[in-house]
Length: 103
Figure (tube, rainbow, N blue to C red):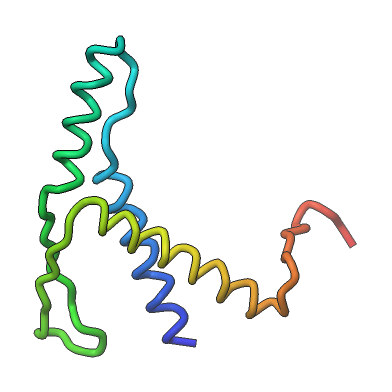
């Protein structure tokens, strides 16, 4: 139970930080779209370093450096894994919240 909780917390943290690393949306002309594409590719190549705490330790920390594209891929894979785990935990069935229905 605690392993699933820690993975879920890690996935949420990665999702929150991955959203801030996403390139800006394109809303200009074709000239500005080319500039935005070059900026987006430059932003994808920029290294982003994060410090992660080791599970079960209060003092042990690891510094992980990846490009923005690699962080996004990791975030996508983590979210997919969490979704699969949640599906397996419910027996592969979609669980719906029926709190509004009385009984």
